[in-house]
Each structure stands twice: as C-alpha cells, then as structure tokens.
Amino acid sequence: LLDTATTVAFDEGQVIVREGDPGKVLFIIKSGTVTVTTTRDDLPVPLARLGRGACFGEVALLSGRLRTATVVAAERCTLLCFHRQSIETVLNAYPKVRKLLETVVRGRARDTIEKITRPPLDPK
Image (cartoon, rainbow, N blue to C red; front, side, top):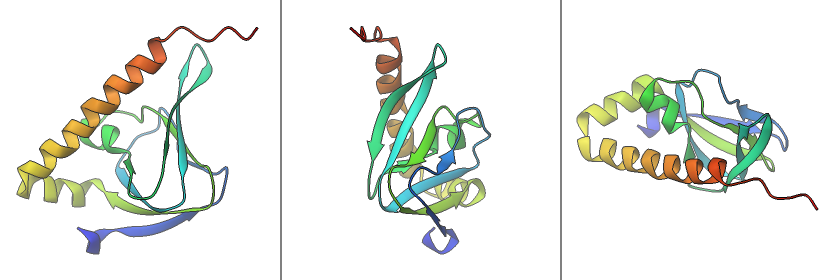
C-alpha cells in the first residue's frame, strides 16, 4: 500500500479537503497538524485537531458520499495520500483492515453527532 502513496505538503491555513466535495483520497498525516470542522447553521463546528499518524478522508472514501468535514492545515504538514483504488485493493484482500477502518468511521460519526447536536455556547 505504501508503494501506491503520494506525498503532498500543505502550508498553514491551506484547505486540504472541503466539506461537500467528492472524496476519493484517504490521508495519513506524516508530519504537522490539521484542524477538522463541519458546519451547523452556517457556523463552523470544531471536530478535531489531528497530528502525526492520524488519518482522515475515510468516511467519504468508504461510503462514496461527499466529504463530511473541512480539513485545514494548522501548520505546515506533509500527508500521505492513498487513492480509492489502492485502498479498495487492500480492504478487499484484508477484511480485518476494512473492519478496523469502519470502526474508526463509526467512532468519528458518533463524535461528530455529539458535537453538532450540542447546544451552541452562549457568547455572553
């Protein structure tokens, strides 16, 4: 799988993926950090700050749906990019890896639902 990865660098503040876009790539953070947000009532809702070794983009990749969040480089970062075809080959050959990735997706979905259904903080 690593042989199929491409490496891409992003500068601080650069949007890596945007909520609502198609998702055909899974990312693993090689260095740096990213912030993950979604929108609720046209306002950004912080979901996570991810660092080295974390992955993102798995929800859209596995489901075939549009991206569920926006990911922005919090600092200069380097990412490993895995395209759908490469990931599918591995997931088909190793069902345990598919189950692991699906577990990550379910956990993130629960976390996201909790964060977006929480009442907004009173700005006072």
